[in-house]
Image (cartoon, rainbow, N blue to C red; front, side, top):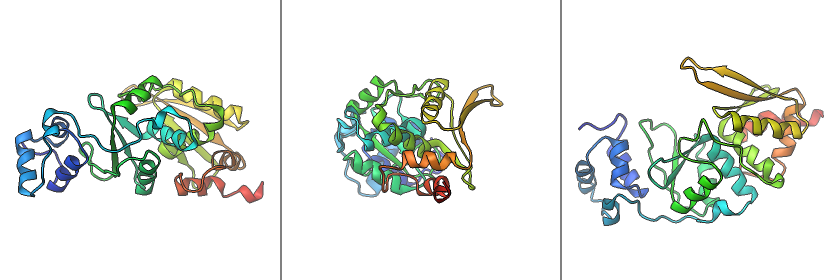
Length: 261
């Protein structure tokens, strides 16, 4: 049985150290559990018997993180809803970001071990993995589940924390035009997109939603904010309470005309 493309010995070691079970690693790597163990033996990696049972070892994380609303929690939730992944079978959630600083902040806010792992067949984007049955359950109570892209709702975020949540949404799956005149968020969930549009409208921003059909017949929803001074107004709202937990270049593009208002 050959390895899946892009899987190196280092990748396998990092997966093991991230507390993945052997059952989960077999699916991603493409090797049998015996072949995976041979790679670990070859490099002198000491193995924990708990992972042979199919359950990941416990790694440090604040199990109550999504139980209490804070600006940090709302921002992380926005990132997860738009650009995160929840494993269908295992109690694992993943955050992928080109800017590794964002992953470090997520781990810091969640009081989690900073463990990066390869995910799927591509190895170009750093991915943070967090294993927690309790956290996965809390997310499910919000309607955020595995295979969420088509059905994820707009969470019932308290008004105080909506700016931080929306900032996370834009950081996760938002596009900002270089000139700072246009921003959009793309989603496959109509319910989520309608909820986001409603928030922008409640903030008196010039916004709209468009619908596109992919070549495979799936519907894609884009929520837009457009206007020379609309993006600076949005920036004033969502960046009011943050110093570092945001994607820098998106803030810069949205804020470039603040002095002209």
